[in-house]
Length: 98
Image (cartoon, rainbow, N blue to C red; front, side):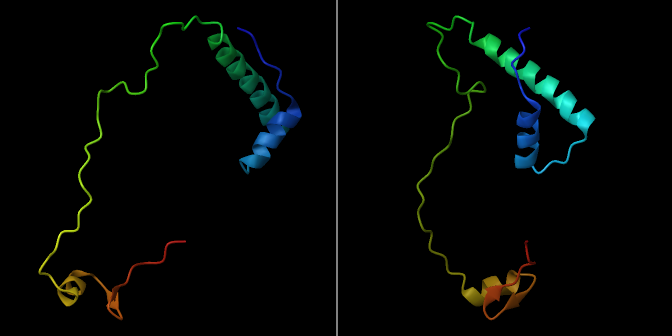
């Protein structure tokens, strides 16, 4: 398997982008691993894919589309607010998400 040259600075830059703090041993190990991975991916360039149709979906699942239509309802605001666990000033109160 061919390895691709990955520098220590490359690994440190990737670690910085990913907000990772790596030890020197981890940087060395990742440098070798990333080089091997890129070398393996480079091998794929050697494959003859002429005439091979791209595979976009392997499960044969399809999106089920429907019209986005407004459905009128006889349920009023107060009835819907009564179903909510908590409300404030005619709005449903939910926990903060930060």
